[in-house]
Image (cartoon, rainbow, N blue to C red; front, top):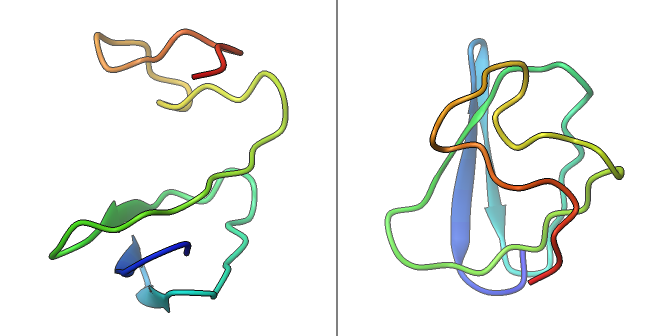
Length: 67
């Protein structure tokens, strides 16, 4: 976390992160991020990872585009 706080919700629990903390989500683990207030987080993923997993929809981002 760069700034603020957020939670990562899993089917069997939840991880809360604050500024300066980091968490590694194992490959293939279903999860949802949530923040009550605006926060800044840095995501690091291997090249080729699709943001919507195996599902393709209007929410799927173009792959390997740097912003």
